Image (cartoon, rainbow, N blue to C red; front, side, top):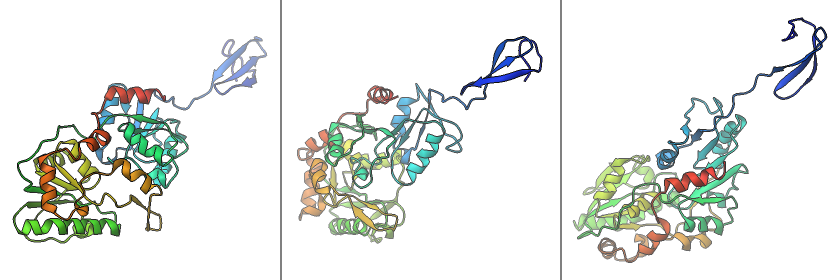
Length: 350
């Protein structure tokens, strides 16, 4: 090694640290250090997000003024300060481990759907999750009820803009959104039973029925029938989806689509509220969450088409007043997204 002082080539190594190697020059009798090459530093304003169906748009937007939304071609391309993910189980954990190996050590979970997340009732939270974001304290209550043990932070309702309930003169334009296909027989059965409640009303022209479905109609457990309008919709959040919700006299749906309708102030009836949340195993079979009976009363919607005999009367009640669902909306939809609250909560964990 050449001495940086006298340029002689008789310097010898006397020690090293993670950041440098130390030498002693036997010619000029002086010490010097040579820096070691270092891995790229984690940029303190860079984050990565697994943006499931554009549901994290509001979260990303809130962070954009302070942090760089990094979208690499490969997960190991460069380190990030923190990661947002809609899931912390199965294959997603493998992806987050790649980010962890590049230096990321803060992992935040946001809800995969509008309903409080129940996935960790079956599968334990990933040990490296920093915290999970939830809509409000009532959503947090659901997670705590089944034993979720990671920190929880509230954001407000972020999936769409909020509108007050807007009553309709009559329940004529009915928008039915079946459960999107997951190949679960109970989902297809619930879709078919709900359609059977609505179709006779369409045949009698008491309602105009539009079915907004995802994927193949058959995979939804439905068959195309005369006198019904069918629209093949997408899974991603879009203005078109919001427009269809806003234009309906009443929405009949399950989970996220129906929750969006309530948030938009559109009269809403849900279906299969009593059906346990279920997830697909590796062997393609399905299993129910373990704490269903404990958590269901915390978020069950009051108006369920499969639990009432007079469908037309139910639809009319739904469009005329929000008396039966106002408390549910207060708890499950709550206040609008607060970007400052969200970013402040996130930064408290950094």
